[in-house]
Image (cartoon, rainbow, N blue to C red; front, side, top):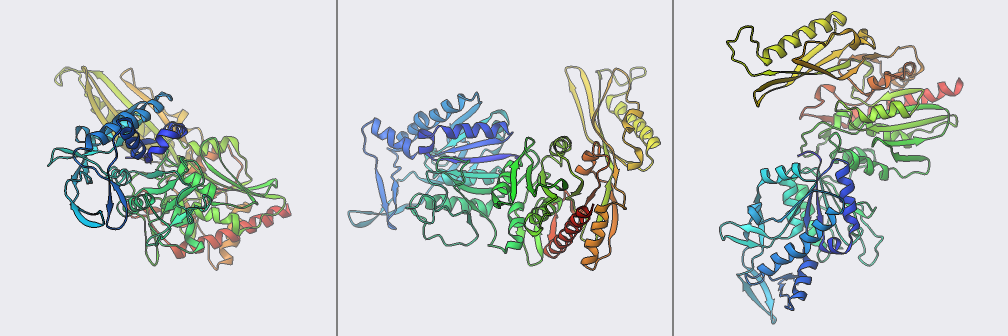
Amino acid sequence: MNNLNVIKLGSSTILEHPSIFEEIYNLTKKGEKILLIAGGAEGIKKKYEKINRKMPFLTLVNGDEVRYCSPEEMPIIRSAYNEIILDTVINNLKKYNLSIFAQCGGENNIVIGEKGNPIKVIENGKKIIIRDSFFGNFKGCNKEFLISNLEKFDVVCICPPIKDLELNEFINIDADMLAAHLSTELGAQHLRFVTSTAGLLKDTEDKFSTIPDIYLDETLPMVKGRMKQKVRAANWALENGICDIYISGPHTLEGKGKTRFWNMELSSKEFDLINKVVRIPSISKDEYELADFLKNYINSPLVQSNIDGAGNIVFIKGNGSKKLMLLGHIDTVPYLWKVHNDENGISGRGVVDAKGCFVNFVHMLEDVEVPKNCSLIVIGAVEEEVSSSKGAYFIRDNYKADAVIIGEPSGEDNLTLGYYGLFKLKITVSKLQEHTTAKDSIGVVDQLIKITNDIRKNVENIDSKCLSSLINVKYMNEDGVMTAIGILNFRMSPDAGKDYASKINLNYGKNADIQILRATPGFENRRNCNLVKAFVRGFNKDGKRIHYLKKRGTSDMNTLATKWFDTPMVAYGPGDSSLDHTDKEYLLTDEIRTTRRILKNTIIEWFKMEEGD
Protein backbone atom coordinates (compact mmCIF):
# COMPACT_ATOMS: atom_id res chain seq x y z
CA MET A 1 0.00 0.00 0.00
CA ASN A 2 1.52 3.29 -1.12
CA ASN A 3 2.29 6.16 1.30
CA LEU A 4 1.65 4.04 4.40
CA ASN A 5 3.19 5.15 7.70
CA VAL A 6 3.01 2.74 10.64
CA ILE A 7 3.59 4.78 13.80
CA LYS A 8 3.91 3.15 17.19
CA LEU A 9 3.12 5.57 20.02
CA GLY A 10 4.08 4.80 23.58
CA SER A 11 1.31 5.20 26.14
CA SER A 12 3.03 8.12 27.92
CA THR A 13 3.19 9.97 24.59
CA ILE A 14 -0.52 9.31 23.99
CA LEU A 15 -1.65 10.34 27.47
CA GLU A 16 0.71 13.20 28.30
CA HIS A 17 1.91 14.75 25.01
CA PRO A 18 -1.06 15.72 22.83
CA SER A 19 1.18 17.67 20.41
CA ILE A 20 1.95 14.33 18.74
CA PHE A 21 -1.55 14.36 17.29
CA GLU A 22 -0.90 17.63 15.50
CA GLU A 23 2.06 15.92 13.87
CA ILE A 24 -0.21 13.06 12.81
CA TYR A 25 -2.66 15.59 11.39
CA ASN A 26 0.13 17.27 9.41
CA LEU A 27 1.08 13.92 7.89
CA THR A 28 -2.48 13.31 6.74
CA LYS A 29 -2.49 16.73 5.07
CA LYS A 30 0.52 15.57 3.03
CA GLY A 31 -1.56 12.65 1.78
CA GLU A 32 0.03 10.00 4.02
CA LYS A 33 -1.90 6.95 5.13
CA ILE A 34 -1.55 6.50 8.90
CA LEU A 35 -1.73 3.29 10.91
CA LEU A 36 -1.20 4.06 14.60
CA ILE A 37 -0.17 1.27 16.94
CA ALA A 38 -0.88 2.28 20.53
CA GLY A 39 1.07 1.08 23.53
CA GLY A 40 -0.68 0.68 26.86
CA ALA A 41 1.63 0.50 29.89
CA GLU A 42 0.62 3.85 31.41
CA GLY A 43 -3.06 3.27 30.63
CA ILE A 44 -2.98 -0.16 32.27
CA LYS A 45 -1.27 1.34 35.30
CA LYS A 46 -3.99 4.00 35.58
CA LYS A 47 -6.70 1.35 35.27
CA TYR A 48 -5.27 -0.71 38.11
CA GLU A 49 -4.97 2.42 40.25
CA LYS A 50 -8.57 3.33 39.47
CA ILE A 51 -9.92 -0.05 40.60
CA ASN A 52 -7.45 -0.15 43.53
CA ARG A 53 -5.94 -3.43 42.43
CA LYS A 54 -2.28 -4.40 42.57
CA MET A 55 -0.75 -4.99 39.15
CA PRO A 56 0.97 -8.40 39.01
CA PHE A 57 4.46 -8.79 37.53
CA LEU A 58 6.73 -11.73 36.81
CA THR A 59 10.53 -11.78 37.05
CA LEU A 60 12.09 -13.70 34.18
CA VAL A 61 15.22 -15.79 34.68
CA ASN A 62 17.28 -13.11 32.85
CA GLY A 63 16.16 -10.53 35.43
CA ASP A 64 13.66 -8.69 33.23
CA GLU A 65 10.31 -7.85 34.81
CA VAL A 66 7.15 -8.35 32.72
CA ARG A 67 3.43 -7.85 33.34
CA TYR A 68 1.60 -11.04 34.30
CA CYS A 69 -1.25 -11.50 31.81
CA SER A 70 -3.20 -14.24 33.54
CA PRO A 71 -6.78 -15.08 32.45
CA GLU A 72 -8.05 -13.07 35.43
CA GLU A 73 -6.05 -9.99 34.43
CA MET A 74 -6.79 -9.96 30.70
CA PRO A 75 -10.25 -8.30 30.98
CA ILE A 76 -8.64 -5.47 32.98
CA ILE A 77 -5.88 -5.01 30.41
CA ARG A 78 -8.41 -5.02 27.58
CA SER A 79 -10.57 -2.50 29.40
CA ALA A 80 -7.58 -0.20 29.95
CA TYR A 81 -6.85 -0.10 26.22
CA ASN A 82 -10.48 0.60 25.30
CA GLU A 83 -11.38 3.09 28.04
CA ILE A 84 -8.13 5.00 28.43
CA ILE A 85 -5.78 4.53 25.45
CA LEU A 86 -8.18 4.37 22.51
CA ASP A 87 -10.52 7.00 23.95
CA THR A 88 -7.57 9.40 24.30
CA VAL A 89 -6.44 8.76 20.73
CA ILE A 90 -9.94 9.26 19.34
CA ASN A 91 -10.66 12.42 21.30
CA ASN A 92 -7.35 14.04 20.33
CA LEU A 93 -7.65 13.23 16.64
CA LYS A 94 -11.23 14.48 16.50
CA LYS A 95 -9.95 17.92 17.49
CA TYR A 96 -8.40 18.05 14.00
CA ASN A 97 -11.60 16.84 12.31
CA LEU A 98 -9.93 13.60 11.30
CA SER A 99 -11.92 10.45 10.68
CA ILE A 100 -10.73 7.58 12.85
CA PHE A 101 -11.13 3.82 13.03
CA ALA A 102 -9.84 2.52 16.37
CA GLN A 103 -10.07 -0.94 17.92
CA CYS A 104 -8.16 -3.54 19.84
CA GLY A 105 -6.55 -5.88 17.35
CA GLY A 106 -8.50 -8.87 18.59
CA GLU A 107 -11.90 -7.30 17.92
CA ASN A 108 -13.48 -8.79 14.79
CA ASN A 109 -10.34 -10.95 14.53
CA ILE A 110 -8.47 -8.10 12.84
CA VAL A 111 -5.17 -9.41 14.26
CA ILE A 112 -4.73 -13.00 15.34
CA GLY A 113 -1.96 -14.65 17.31
CA GLU A 114 -1.11 -17.64 19.40
CA LYS A 115 -0.50 -17.96 23.12
CA GLY A 116 3.17 -18.21 23.98
CA ASN A 117 4.93 -21.18 25.48
CA PRO A 118 5.11 -21.61 29.25
CA ILE A 119 7.69 -19.28 30.75
CA LYS A 120 10.36 -19.74 33.38
CA VAL A 121 10.29 -17.16 36.17
CA ILE A 122 11.90 -16.53 39.51
CA GLU A 123 9.57 -16.58 42.51
CA ASN A 124 10.86 -16.38 46.06
CA GLY A 125 14.34 -17.14 44.73
CA LYS A 126 13.23 -20.30 42.94
CA LYS A 127 12.65 -21.10 39.26
CA ILE A 128 9.08 -22.06 38.47
CA ILE A 129 7.05 -22.55 35.27
CA ILE A 130 4.07 -20.27 34.52
CA ARG A 131 1.64 -21.90 32.10
CA ASP A 132 -1.37 -19.58 32.18
CA SER A 133 0.20 -16.36 30.90
CA PHE A 134 -2.01 -15.01 28.11
CA PHE A 135 0.91 -13.29 26.42
CA GLY A 136 1.47 -14.34 22.83
CA ASN A 137 2.86 -13.74 19.39
CA PHE A 138 1.60 -12.37 16.09
CA LYS A 139 0.24 -14.94 13.65
CA GLY A 140 -1.60 -12.94 10.97
CA CYS A 141 -4.06 -10.16 10.20
CA ASN A 142 -7.06 -9.38 8.01
CA LYS A 143 -5.13 -7.39 5.40
CA GLU A 144 -8.19 -6.63 3.27
CA PHE A 145 -10.05 -5.21 6.26
CA LEU A 146 -7.13 -3.02 7.31
CA ILE A 147 -6.42 -1.75 3.79
CA SER A 148 -10.09 -0.99 3.24
CA ASN A 149 -10.23 1.08 6.42
CA LEU A 150 -6.95 2.83 5.67
CA GLU A 151 -8.56 3.96 2.42
CA LYS A 152 -11.78 5.10 4.17
CA PHE A 153 -10.39 6.80 7.27
CA ASP A 154 -7.73 9.45 7.86
CA VAL A 155 -6.23 7.40 10.68
CA VAL A 156 -6.55 3.75 11.69
CA CYS A 157 -5.49 2.91 15.24
CA ILE A 158 -4.88 -0.67 16.41
CA CYS A 159 -3.70 -1.77 19.84
CA PRO A 160 -3.29 -4.99 21.84
CA PRO A 161 -4.73 -7.38 22.84
CA ILE A 162 -5.16 -9.66 19.81
CA LYS A 163 -7.14 -12.89 19.35
CA ASP A 164 -6.04 -16.50 19.69
CA LEU A 165 -8.62 -18.27 17.53
CA GLU A 166 -7.76 -21.74 18.78
CA LEU A 167 -8.34 -20.73 22.40
CA ASN A 168 -11.06 -18.20 21.44
CA GLU A 169 -9.39 -15.84 23.91
CA PHE A 170 -7.81 -12.40 23.82
CA ILE A 171 -4.07 -12.50 24.36
CA ASN A 172 -1.66 -9.67 25.01
CA ILE A 173 1.19 -8.84 22.62
CA ASP A 174 4.07 -6.39 22.69
CA ALA A 175 2.89 -3.27 20.82
CA ASP A 176 6.34 -2.67 19.27
CA MET A 177 6.32 -6.14 17.72
CA LEU A 178 2.71 -5.64 16.63
CA ALA A 179 3.83 -2.51 14.74
CA ALA A 180 6.74 -4.38 13.16
CA HIS A 181 4.54 -7.24 11.98
CA LEU A 182 1.76 -5.03 10.60
CA SER A 183 4.23 -2.82 8.74
CA THR A 184 5.56 -5.93 7.02
CA GLU A 185 2.17 -7.50 6.32
CA LEU A 186 0.84 -4.28 4.75
CA GLY A 187 4.01 -3.36 2.87
CA ALA A 188 4.39 -0.04 4.71
CA GLN A 189 6.98 2.44 3.46
CA HIS A 190 7.73 3.96 6.88
CA LEU A 191 7.83 2.54 10.42
CA ARG A 192 8.26 4.88 13.39
CA PHE A 193 8.64 4.19 17.11
CA VAL A 194 7.92 7.34 19.14
CA THR A 195 9.37 7.14 22.62
CA SER A 196 10.32 9.26 25.64
CA THR A 197 13.98 9.68 24.66
CA ALA A 198 15.67 11.35 21.70
CA GLY A 199 16.06 8.09 19.84
CA LEU A 200 18.53 5.50 21.04
CA LEU A 201 21.06 7.01 23.46
CA LYS A 202 24.73 6.06 23.69
CA ASP A 203 24.60 7.14 27.33
CA THR A 204 21.20 6.84 29.00
CA GLU A 205 22.24 9.59 31.42
CA ASP A 206 22.92 12.01 28.55
CA LYS A 207 19.74 13.01 26.73
CA PHE A 208 21.79 14.54 23.89
CA SER A 209 23.78 11.38 23.10
CA THR A 210 21.51 10.16 20.29
CA ILE A 211 22.97 7.44 18.06
CA PRO A 212 21.94 8.60 14.56
CA ASP A 213 22.47 5.33 12.67
CA ILE A 214 22.36 1.63 13.46
CA TYR A 215 23.77 -0.75 10.84
CA LEU A 216 23.44 -4.49 10.35
CA ASP A 217 24.84 -6.79 13.03
CA GLU A 218 25.82 -3.98 15.39
CA THR A 219 26.08 -4.95 19.04
CA LEU A 220 24.23 -2.52 21.27
CA PRO A 221 25.38 -3.01 24.86
CA MET A 222 23.92 0.36 25.89
CA VAL A 223 20.34 -0.78 25.20
CA LYS A 224 18.41 -1.54 28.38
CA GLY A 225 14.85 -1.96 29.62
CA ARG A 226 11.92 -1.31 27.31
CA MET A 227 14.24 0.02 24.62
CA LYS A 228 15.49 -3.53 24.01
CA GLN A 229 12.04 -4.48 22.73
CA LYS A 230 11.95 -1.51 20.35
CA VAL A 231 15.33 -2.47 18.95
CA ARG A 232 14.16 -6.07 18.59
CA ALA A 233 11.03 -4.93 16.74
CA ALA A 234 13.02 -2.56 14.50
CA ASN A 235 15.47 -5.30 13.57
CA TRP A 236 12.64 -7.75 12.88
CA ALA A 237 10.97 -5.27 10.50
CA LEU A 238 14.33 -4.50 8.90
CA GLU A 239 14.86 -8.18 8.17
CA ASN A 240 11.35 -8.91 6.92
CA GLY A 241 9.98 -5.66 5.46
CA ILE A 242 10.81 -2.92 2.97
CA CYS A 243 10.16 0.14 5.15
CA ASP A 244 12.62 2.67 6.47
CA ILE A 245 12.69 2.67 10.26
CA TYR A 246 13.57 5.03 13.05
CA ILE A 247 13.10 5.50 16.78
CA SER A 248 12.21 9.11 17.57
CA GLY A 249 11.59 11.37 20.51
CA PRO A 250 11.15 12.64 23.06
CA HIS A 251 7.45 12.20 22.29
CA THR A 252 7.75 13.55 18.75
CA LEU A 253 8.25 12.51 15.14
CA GLU A 254 9.71 15.84 14.07
CA GLY A 255 12.67 16.29 16.42
CA LYS A 256 16.27 15.61 15.44
CA GLY A 257 16.52 12.93 18.11
CA LYS A 258 16.20 10.05 15.63
CA THR A 259 17.95 6.72 15.42
CA ARG A 260 17.63 5.17 11.96
CA PHE A 261 18.05 1.48 11.28
CA TRP A 262 19.67 0.48 7.98
CA ASN A 263 19.65 -2.92 6.28
CA MET A 264 23.24 -2.33 5.20
CA GLU A 265 26.71 -2.41 6.62
CA LEU A 266 28.49 0.85 7.30
CA SER A 267 29.83 1.94 3.90
CA SER A 268 32.53 4.34 2.78
CA LYS A 269 31.75 8.04 2.53
CA GLU A 270 31.86 7.64 -1.25
CA PHE A 271 28.72 5.47 -1.27
CA ASP A 272 27.09 6.20 2.09
CA LEU A 273 24.54 8.64 0.70
CA ILE A 274 23.41 6.60 -2.31
CA ASN A 275 23.01 3.50 -0.12
CA LYS A 276 20.80 5.41 2.29
CA VAL A 277 18.78 7.40 -0.24
CA VAL A 278 17.77 4.21 -2.10
CA ARG A 279 16.66 2.69 1.20
CA ILE A 280 14.20 5.49 2.00
CA PRO A 281 11.03 4.83 -0.02
CA SER A 282 9.79 7.88 -1.93
CA ILE A 283 7.01 6.85 -4.28
CA SER A 284 5.48 9.89 -6.01
CA LYS A 285 3.58 12.10 -3.52
CA ASP A 286 5.44 10.44 -0.62
CA GLU A 287 8.74 12.28 -0.96
CA TYR A 288 8.76 14.34 2.25
CA GLU A 289 10.63 11.80 4.38
CA LEU A 290 13.49 11.60 1.89
CA ALA A 291 13.56 15.38 1.39
CA ASP A 292 13.74 15.90 5.16
CA PHE A 293 16.50 13.30 5.49
CA LEU A 294 18.56 15.00 2.77
CA LYS A 295 18.05 18.42 4.33
CA ASN A 296 19.52 17.17 7.61
CA TYR A 297 22.24 15.06 5.97
CA ILE A 298 23.95 18.05 4.35
CA ASN A 299 25.50 20.05 7.16
CA SER A 300 27.79 22.73 5.72
CA PRO A 301 27.89 26.49 6.45
CA LEU A 302 28.59 27.01 2.73
CA VAL A 303 25.33 25.37 1.63
CA GLN A 304 21.82 26.75 2.12
CA SER A 305 19.09 24.10 2.26
CA ASN A 306 15.32 24.14 2.38
CA ILE A 307 12.19 22.31 1.29
CA ASP A 308 10.27 24.66 -0.99
CA GLY A 309 6.55 25.23 -1.49
CA ALA A 310 6.17 22.23 -3.79
CA GLY A 311 8.11 19.87 -1.52
CA ASN A 312 11.32 19.95 -3.58
CA ILE A 313 14.58 19.65 -1.66
CA VAL A 314 16.78 22.64 -2.59
CA PHE A 315 20.49 23.26 -1.95
CA ILE A 316 22.34 26.45 -2.96
CA LYS A 317 26.10 26.98 -2.80
CA GLY A 318 27.41 30.44 -3.68
CA ASN A 319 25.51 33.64 -4.35
CA GLY A 320 26.83 34.82 -7.71
CA SER A 321 24.66 35.85 -10.64
CA LYS A 322 25.82 33.03 -12.97
CA LYS A 323 23.61 30.12 -11.95
CA LEU A 324 24.07 26.46 -12.84
CA MET A 325 21.15 24.24 -11.82
CA LEU A 326 21.47 20.50 -11.26
CA LEU A 327 17.89 19.23 -11.33
CA GLY A 328 17.11 15.66 -10.38
CA HIS A 329 14.00 14.03 -8.97
CA ILE A 330 13.58 12.10 -5.73
CA ASP A 331 10.32 10.27 -6.43
CA THR A 332 9.99 6.78 -7.86
CA VAL A 333 7.29 4.64 -9.42
CA PRO A 334 5.53 2.11 -7.10
CA TYR A 335 6.48 -1.43 -6.16
CA LEU A 336 9.34 -1.68 -3.73
CA TRP A 337 11.70 -4.52 -2.97
CA LYS A 338 14.43 -4.96 -0.41
CA VAL A 339 17.53 -3.03 -1.42
CA HIS A 340 20.69 -5.08 -1.61
CA ASN A 341 24.35 -4.54 -2.40
CA ASP A 342 26.88 -6.84 -3.99
CA GLU A 343 30.56 -6.37 -4.76
CA ASN A 344 29.76 -4.56 -8.03
CA GLY A 345 26.71 -2.42 -7.37
CA ILE A 346 23.36 -1.77 -5.76
CA SER A 347 19.82 -2.89 -6.60
CA GLY A 348 16.65 -1.14 -5.46
CA ARG A 349 13.66 0.84 -6.63
CA GLY A 350 14.80 4.20 -7.99
CA VAL A 351 18.54 3.56 -7.96
CA VAL A 352 18.61 4.07 -11.76
CA ASP A 353 15.57 6.32 -12.15
CA ALA A 354 16.93 8.50 -10.79
CA LYS A 355 18.35 8.52 -7.26
CA GLY A 356 21.84 7.64 -8.45
CA CYS A 357 21.84 10.73 -10.67
CA PHE A 358 20.57 13.00 -7.92
CA VAL A 359 23.02 11.74 -5.31
CA ASN A 360 25.83 12.56 -7.74
CA PHE A 361 24.43 16.09 -7.86
CA VAL A 362 24.43 16.34 -4.07
CA HIS A 363 28.08 15.27 -3.95
CA MET A 364 28.95 18.26 -6.15
CA LEU A 365 28.08 20.55 -3.26
CA GLU A 366 31.18 19.27 -1.49
CA ASP A 367 33.37 18.37 -4.48
CA VAL A 368 33.19 21.66 -6.41
CA GLU A 369 34.42 25.10 -5.41
CA VAL A 370 31.97 27.75 -6.61
CA PRO A 371 33.53 31.00 -7.95
CA LYS A 372 32.41 34.30 -6.45
CA ASN A 373 30.32 35.32 -9.44
CA CYS A 374 28.57 31.93 -9.67
CA SER A 375 25.98 29.82 -7.86
CA LEU A 376 25.39 26.08 -7.84
CA ILE A 377 21.74 25.10 -7.32
CA VAL A 378 20.93 21.44 -6.63
CA ILE A 379 17.25 20.47 -6.58
CA GLY A 380 15.51 17.14 -6.03
CA ALA A 381 12.08 17.54 -7.57
CA VAL A 382 8.88 15.80 -6.48
CA GLU A 383 6.20 14.10 -8.60
CA GLU A 384 8.32 13.70 -11.73
CA GLU A 385 6.98 10.19 -12.26
CA VAL A 386 3.32 11.27 -12.37
CA SER A 387 1.47 13.56 -14.76
CA SER A 388 1.33 16.47 -12.32
CA SER A 389 5.10 17.20 -12.50
CA LYS A 390 4.40 19.38 -9.48
CA GLY A 391 8.03 19.94 -8.59
CA ALA A 392 9.16 20.90 -12.09
CA TYR A 393 6.30 23.35 -12.65
CA PHE A 394 7.12 25.06 -9.36
CA ILE A 395 10.78 25.30 -10.35
CA ARG A 396 9.88 26.65 -13.78
CA ASP A 397 7.78 29.43 -12.26
CA ASN A 398 9.89 30.32 -9.21
CA TYR A 399 13.57 29.79 -10.06
CA LYS A 400 16.05 31.00 -12.66
CA ALA A 401 19.21 29.47 -14.09
CA ASP A 402 21.68 30.12 -16.88
CA ALA A 403 22.06 26.42 -17.63
CA VAL A 404 20.51 23.19 -16.37
CA ILE A 405 21.79 19.64 -16.04
CA ILE A 406 18.91 17.19 -15.60
CA GLY A 407 19.59 14.06 -13.53
CA GLU A 408 18.40 11.16 -15.67
CA PRO A 409 20.25 7.95 -16.59
CA SER A 410 22.22 8.35 -19.79
CA GLY A 411 25.07 5.96 -19.06
CA GLU A 412 28.59 7.19 -18.44
CA ASP A 413 29.45 7.55 -22.16
CA ASN A 414 26.42 9.55 -23.29
CA LEU A 415 24.91 13.01 -23.02
CA THR A 416 21.18 13.44 -23.57
CA LEU A 417 20.40 16.55 -25.64
CA GLY A 418 16.63 16.24 -25.71
CA TYR A 419 13.42 14.37 -24.99
CA TYR A 420 10.16 13.72 -26.76
CA GLY A 421 7.13 15.51 -25.32
CA LEU A 422 4.03 13.98 -23.80
CA PHE A 423 0.50 14.42 -25.14
CA LYS A 424 -1.89 12.63 -22.79
CA LEU A 425 -5.65 12.38 -23.32
CA LYS A 426 -8.47 10.96 -21.26
CA ILE A 427 -11.24 9.77 -23.58
CA THR A 428 -14.66 9.08 -22.02
CA VAL A 429 -17.53 7.70 -24.09
CA SER A 430 -20.98 7.37 -22.46
CA LYS A 431 -24.44 6.48 -23.74
CA LEU A 432 -27.68 4.92 -22.55
CA GLN A 433 -27.82 1.16 -22.64
CA GLU A 434 -29.38 -0.28 -25.82
CA HIS A 435 -29.72 -3.64 -27.49
CA THR A 436 -26.75 -4.58 -29.61
CA THR A 437 -29.08 -5.37 -32.54
CA ALA A 438 -30.59 -1.88 -32.58
CA LYS A 439 -30.24 -0.02 -35.86
CA ASP A 440 -26.96 1.95 -36.11
CA SER A 441 -25.97 0.74 -32.65
CA ILE A 442 -22.31 1.03 -31.77
CA GLY A 443 -21.01 0.05 -28.37
CA VAL A 444 -19.06 2.51 -26.24
CA VAL A 445 -15.92 0.38 -26.39
CA ASP A 446 -16.09 0.27 -30.19
CA GLN A 447 -16.67 4.01 -30.26
CA LEU A 448 -13.68 4.53 -27.95
CA ILE A 449 -11.47 2.51 -30.30
CA LYS A 450 -12.81 4.39 -33.35
CA ILE A 451 -12.08 7.79 -31.74
CA THR A 452 -8.66 6.58 -30.63
CA ASN A 453 -7.72 5.48 -34.14
CA ASP A 454 -8.98 8.75 -35.64
CA ILE A 455 -6.99 10.88 -33.16
CA ARG A 456 -3.91 8.78 -33.88
CA LYS A 457 -4.17 9.54 -37.59
CA ASN A 458 -4.58 13.25 -36.93
CA VAL A 459 -1.59 13.36 -34.59
CA GLU A 460 0.58 11.36 -37.01
CA ASN A 461 -0.20 13.92 -39.71
CA ILE A 462 1.35 16.57 -37.45
CA ASP A 463 4.25 14.44 -36.15
CA SER A 464 5.21 11.39 -38.19
CA LYS A 465 7.79 10.43 -35.54
CA CYS A 466 5.29 10.23 -32.67
CA LEU A 467 4.65 7.07 -30.66
CA SER A 468 1.28 6.22 -29.10
CA SER A 469 -0.31 3.74 -26.73
CA LEU A 470 -3.81 3.24 -25.31
CA ILE A 471 -3.61 2.42 -21.61
CA ASN A 472 -5.89 1.93 -18.59
CA VAL A 473 -9.05 1.09 -20.54
CA LYS A 474 -12.12 0.72 -18.28
CA TYR A 475 -15.74 -0.26 -18.98
CA MET A 476 -18.70 0.38 -16.64
CA ASN A 477 -22.45 -0.15 -16.80
CA GLU A 478 -24.16 1.79 -14.01
CA ASP A 479 -27.87 2.60 -13.78
CA GLY A 480 -28.37 1.93 -17.47
CA VAL A 481 -25.49 4.13 -18.61
CA MET A 482 -22.60 2.45 -20.42
CA THR A 483 -19.21 4.14 -20.15
CA ALA A 484 -15.80 3.37 -21.63
CA ILE A 485 -12.71 5.29 -20.53
CA GLY A 486 -9.24 5.13 -22.00
CA ILE A 487 -5.99 7.04 -21.53
CA LEU A 488 -4.27 7.72 -24.86
CA ASN A 489 -0.58 8.57 -24.60
CA PHE A 490 1.51 10.15 -27.35
CA ARG A 491 5.24 10.72 -27.26
CA MET A 492 5.77 13.80 -29.43
CA SER A 493 9.07 14.52 -31.13
CA PRO A 494 10.59 18.03 -30.87
CA ASP A 495 9.63 18.49 -34.56
CA ALA A 496 5.94 18.73 -33.54
CA GLY A 497 6.56 22.21 -32.11
CA LYS A 498 5.18 23.80 -28.98
CA ASP A 499 1.51 24.31 -29.93
CA TYR A 500 0.71 20.96 -31.56
CA ALA A 501 -2.31 20.40 -29.29
CA SER A 502 -4.21 23.35 -30.82
CA LYS A 503 -4.01 21.71 -34.26
CA ILE A 504 -5.80 18.52 -33.24
CA ASN A 505 -9.59 18.21 -33.42
CA LEU A 506 -10.94 16.69 -30.22
CA ASN A 507 -14.66 17.29 -30.84
CA TYR A 508 -16.40 13.94 -31.32
CA GLY A 509 -19.99 14.73 -30.37
CA LYS A 510 -22.04 14.78 -27.21
CA ASN A 511 -21.34 11.16 -26.26
CA ALA A 512 -17.58 11.71 -26.12
CA ASP A 513 -15.63 13.85 -23.68
CA ILE A 514 -11.92 14.28 -24.37
CA GLN A 515 -9.78 15.87 -21.70
CA ILE A 516 -6.17 16.92 -22.25
CA LEU A 517 -4.21 15.71 -19.21
CA ARG A 518 -0.83 16.80 -20.52
CA ALA A 519 0.45 18.62 -23.61
CA THR A 520 4.16 19.01 -23.06
CA PRO A 521 6.28 19.70 -26.15
CA GLY A 522 9.50 17.92 -26.99
CA PHE A 523 12.83 19.68 -26.54
CA GLU A 524 16.28 19.37 -28.11
CA ASN A 525 19.27 21.41 -26.98
CA ARG A 526 21.80 22.78 -29.46
CA ARG A 527 25.38 21.48 -29.37
CA ASN A 528 27.25 24.78 -29.66
CA CYS A 529 26.42 26.18 -26.19
CA ASN A 530 28.82 26.49 -23.24
CA LEU A 531 27.06 23.71 -21.36
CA VAL A 532 27.67 21.09 -24.05
CA LYS A 533 31.22 22.40 -24.60
CA ALA A 534 31.87 21.99 -20.87
CA PHE A 535 30.67 18.38 -21.08
CA VAL A 536 32.94 17.72 -24.06
CA ARG A 537 35.89 18.94 -21.97
CA GLY A 538 34.69 16.93 -18.96
CA PHE A 539 34.56 13.77 -21.07
CA ASN A 540 37.96 14.49 -22.59
CA LYS A 541 39.56 14.89 -19.16
CA ASP A 542 38.35 11.39 -18.33
CA GLY A 543 39.68 10.03 -21.64
CA LYS A 544 36.22 9.52 -23.11
CA ARG A 545 34.54 10.51 -26.34
CA ILE A 546 31.06 11.97 -25.94
CA HIS A 547 28.00 10.39 -27.60
CA TYR A 548 24.75 12.33 -28.00
CA LEU A 549 21.27 10.95 -27.33
CA LYS A 550 17.72 12.10 -27.98
CA LYS A 551 15.26 10.09 -25.88
CA ARG A 552 11.67 9.20 -26.60
CA GLY A 553 10.71 9.48 -22.96
CA THR A 554 9.88 12.71 -21.15
CA SER A 555 11.66 14.40 -18.26
CA ASP A 556 11.47 17.59 -16.22
CA MET A 557 13.54 19.16 -19.01
CA ASN A 558 10.36 19.30 -21.12
CA THR A 559 8.46 21.15 -18.40
CA LEU A 560 11.16 23.78 -17.93
CA ALA A 561 11.44 24.24 -21.69
CA THR A 562 7.83 25.43 -21.93
CA LYS A 563 9.01 28.77 -20.50
CA TRP A 564 12.81 28.68 -20.30
CA PHE A 565 13.14 29.10 -24.06
CA ASP A 566 16.80 30.15 -24.25
CA THR A 567 18.21 28.15 -21.34
CA PRO A 568 20.67 25.39 -22.32
CA MET A 569 19.60 22.04 -20.86
CA VAL A 570 21.04 18.54 -21.11
CA ALA A 571 20.67 15.34 -19.07
CA TYR A 572 23.44 13.20 -17.63
CA GLY A 573 23.72 10.50 -15.03
CA PRO A 574 24.70 6.90 -14.28
CA GLY A 575 22.51 3.95 -15.19
CA ASP A 576 20.92 2.01 -18.02
CA SER A 577 17.60 3.72 -18.79
CA SER A 578 16.16 0.47 -20.18
CA LEU A 579 15.93 -0.61 -16.52
CA ASP A 580 13.70 2.37 -15.62
CA HIS A 581 10.42 1.31 -13.96
CA THR A 582 11.41 -2.37 -13.98
CA ASP A 583 12.15 -4.68 -11.06
CA LYS A 584 15.72 -5.03 -12.32
CA GLU A 585 17.06 -1.56 -11.48
CA TYR A 586 20.75 -1.99 -10.76
CA LEU A 587 23.58 0.53 -10.68
CA LEU A 588 27.29 -0.27 -10.95
CA THR A 589 29.50 1.44 -8.40
CA ASP A 590 32.22 1.93 -11.04
CA GLU A 591 29.71 3.84 -13.19
CA ILE A 592 28.76 6.02 -10.23
CA ARG A 593 32.44 6.91 -9.79
CA THR A 594 32.99 7.66 -13.47
CA THR A 595 29.91 9.84 -13.93
CA ARG A 596 30.73 11.68 -10.72
CA ARG A 597 34.22 12.53 -12.02
CA ILE A 598 32.92 13.66 -15.41
CA LEU A 599 30.18 15.73 -13.77
CA LYS A 600 32.69 17.43 -11.47
CA ASN A 601 35.04 18.26 -14.35
CA THR A 602 32.12 19.56 -16.44
CA ILE A 603 30.86 21.88 -13.71
CA ILE A 604 34.35 23.27 -13.14
CA GLU A 605 34.71 23.90 -16.90
CA TRP A 606 31.32 25.63 -17.10
CA PHE A 607 32.23 27.92 -14.22
CA LYS A 608 35.51 28.78 -15.97
CA MET A 609 33.66 29.73 -19.16
CA GLU A 610 31.12 31.83 -17.30
CA GLU A 611 33.83 33.58 -15.29
CA GLY A 612 35.40 34.69 -18.56
CA ASP A 613 32.17 36.25 -19.89
